[in-house]
Image (tube, rainbow, N blue to C red; front, side, top):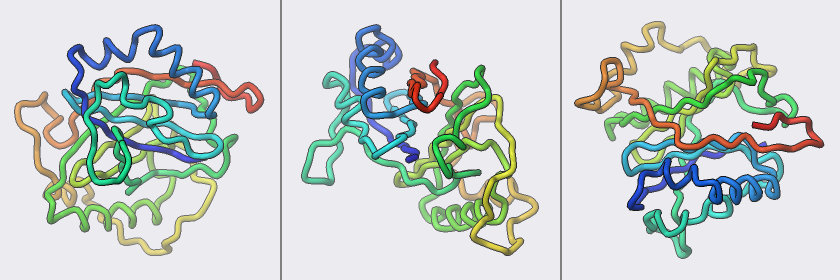
Length: 226
């Protein structure tokens, strides 16, 4: 099992939801996901930015194999010798990690993907990663089983699901210390560049629009269909 987080820049004329919820686009994506053994794909939008989450049951499948350049509506990302429209976001925090495909099956049929985005002060990135690794390895299973934070440059993408799945992690963390700060929110606040002109309570973590959810189907593993 491989969990994947990516972002892209939308440059299409219509809204992303209009494009990605087209029947032909959804049908093609579902077919590719089944062939590549990809499940639980969620796509979020924040104006012209797209954020993608999905899980690979077998070998890792890159987003270009799933969504490509989405009909020429994505901007090209420089920095490599090959064409790419999606850039990976590094997993810097997760409440749990999967031990097997079976252990990772969802229990809430009414679940809904939930995404948020935040910005870090560039000089605070190392501190933020340090505190979150400490939290992750001291207290595995302390929040939503599927909660995960990805980082690209100073941009954070927090993927989770509602209702939360709260259960003990089936493994021990890598740290036996107890250094996670008690006043977590107070310690974290100086790390962020706050958003302006946003709804109340979203000045740090701004909610993303869910554009598309495709759960996929793997009948031999008993995974739920959307």
